[in-house]
Length: 460
Image (tube, rainbow, N blue to C red; front, side):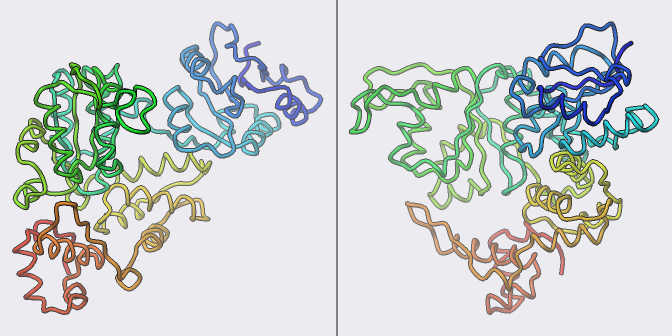
């Protein structure tokens, strides 16, 4: 008799399961217990396989992949108490449709045994996980005109081996995700993708980290070291926050991009490199060039292909899709498979201006999933999640002005300060003018002079 449920676990799991089943043999209930990571030989299987993901022998890539491909109608459910986000994504790519904790697993088995014997009806509604290809074209979520244009461009670039590209966008718009999609949907997808946060590398270590060094090149250079550009050979290197590089570092990077050759620190000979360079920034590089904070020739070199990610407030029609995606992910991550999302909650999300963009939206949805005690997230619960995550002007009276090594103009400081205060008060001009101690008319002139009118988050 073909089983309806497969359970992959160790001896302890088997013993506990036998207690739940009782005196009736597991086979009589069409439950197959598997203590080895081996797919049973069956002509067909139309049921559920529960896999203990906390046991290394069952959580491996090879076994999960083989299991997922073994039967057309098989549904895999993982068993784990508190999987992190990275692990959830990994097993989702391998075919795991849902993750439950042990208590939920045993409850489902008991319902199946003592209920109507139909495992599919006994299970809670499944919470979908992210797409099996996390960096495919479908990872760019939304259907707004601007997102559609970006998808079309990425799809076209998938067949082109271009050398450089740059992504512009505010913080939280998804620049790092887009960089990965560009790599993994392109001709270099089978080679390394190396991500570098330019703000995290001190200027004195820039050459060593990116270009490598020879033994003895400096005091602590005890061995030869390959740089990140070499690790990305034939693949892609992603330079995030490139606008924060110092002028000396920019000059060194420009030389590499122009010659496609590098010389490790302390070496005599240069090496040829074949690397695609993707860069990203949340600052206006043209303005930075005018203020002598960024090299114009480097901008020209990177600007071969430029992609501008719109802020979420300019594509609010995408909010329901983004919210549902995040909801499904966090509902599964936190084992809340019975939780649902009310349409009024989606409407509440569309009323917010999202200064933190998609990142803020994800955090709000995650907070709602965690804190909602009912079985449905309503508009009231979603508004509470937004409120709990918002830092108000009264709570936040400190702003930080970033001053690069080469200095900064008073005009740039004015723009940063006014922009931060506008963000702080959700772009309420009356409150912003009050905090600045100026009139609304003066604030309006400052915004117009600094181009802040184009970044309007909402109306008063």
